[in-house]
Length: 492
Image (cartoon, rainbow, N blue to C red; front, side, top):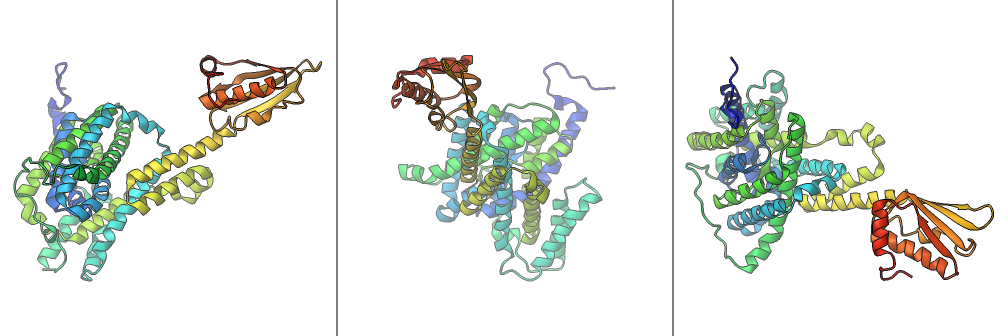
């Protein structure tokens, strides 16, 4: 007999739904452990800092987030942003940055930053993902330099397990099985290889709240502000992209504004509890959704189970060989990269401008190690290329009246600052008759630059004693032209 829920009761109160959510949350928690540790190492902090972040992010976002079933935790993108700060100034400044970054996210979310995502071109999104994959891979290279030779076959074996094991079963995440197998092998064979325990102690108790150990001065604020802004932007971009992906997979809608504010709240809480901050995780979210999770319960339990596993099984987790985590991150980078975007068939069909934007985004991110800078530069490049392309769509064609009484010009296309720049040069001021008609029935005026250009055309004709009549304006164009015509400084 089907379980009926009273109106207003959460879906997860259904025993069948709750079972699915609990199992999905457990699988995600198991998969979170190796990645949280790996991202901690990328950021240059103890594993406990990343694990605390994954715990608090998941638990808090389950309550305040706007996308049910999406997993937020410590991520590679955030780790890469904060790593330079940790290297130069230490953990205290990282915690302060996380809190400030969370505050910025709350403000941006309240201001409606989620709506701006529509202006990020797809080619920038692809470049963002590809650059993230490249940086994650590059971060693994130092772990494979000046290490015992046995590390290399261990890493190769871990990669092989993760590639081929899913063909047999997906009941347990392949990275977890790979890590367990390598840990058992290295412990049983007494192999002297770098382990997680070499990087710092795992937590043995729940995190406690506290303020960052930094001076609360303007100098501190000016130091952490650029990192906090990059942190906020990267976290929001990755989270909103992931939320859109889950929307498409589940055929449901989510509140992107609530998600943006929720990410900020989760990061503030995470910073106060000593975590490294985070954002939505594409990989863990896919594990959760593909295991049938659709509610906030699975997200909450993923964080709760994670802490239980660390506190109860911490000594065992400390013996995980670094080779296993390197293999996990290499596979994550390979899976993150959009290989279709660089396939020869795709490159042949893709417009040159789109390819340029993608390459610029990747190049800037890899050069600066800052995902936010790459997205901004890529978006600006895309806007410039789009403006140049659209500018050529505005055309002016002349039709002279047979009896010579007037000249008719038909303007077609979109008139804005780029396309209207050469508008003034498209008319025959000396040769035209005394009355000129400019038909804008197939055009649209978008900005003041276009109104100023039309004013310049009228002024040039007026200087020769000729009159100009502008006809065919649609309502928005007529309103803008009527408001601004003759009022713009610099019009001849």
